[in-house]
Amino acid sequence: MEKEFAEQMKQSLFNLKKEIIDTLIANNEDFRAIVEGLDPKDFADIASDDIDRKMLETIGSKDMKRMKLIDSAITRIEQGKYGLCMKCGKKIPRERLEAIPYALMCIECQSADERRNR
Image 1 (tube, rainbow, N blue to C red):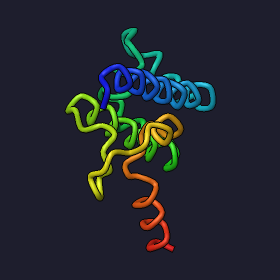
Image 2 (image 1 turned 180 degrees about the vertical axis):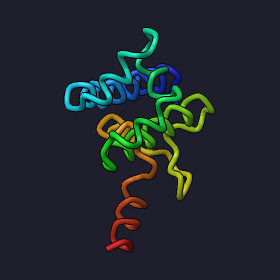
Image 3 (image 1 turned 30 degrees about the vertical axis):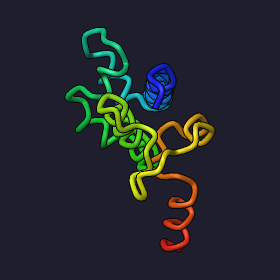
Image 4 (image 1 turned 90 degrees about the vertical axis):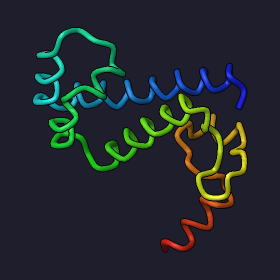
């Protein structure tokens, strides 16, 4: 994976994470109090801080799943494994990663997985 593209996707992932946190802050008084009670930090640090346990109580399961996928994608970027299908190992098309930066599988494997889970 091109280093420049990986860095671009990493920034996109951090932006998605920030959007989820911003939505939580806007929609949930308890979460806002948690975040405001912390020292000023980067949102990426906030999400990985010790508020994870408190966040689990506040965040919806859909957003929680997205946060985990985002964190996993950031880790794969840092390990140099980003953009490879977790199932078949093939390169995930750039267009798919631009649409879903935290995609774990190529379209073929994802489709097969969804058919199997129906």
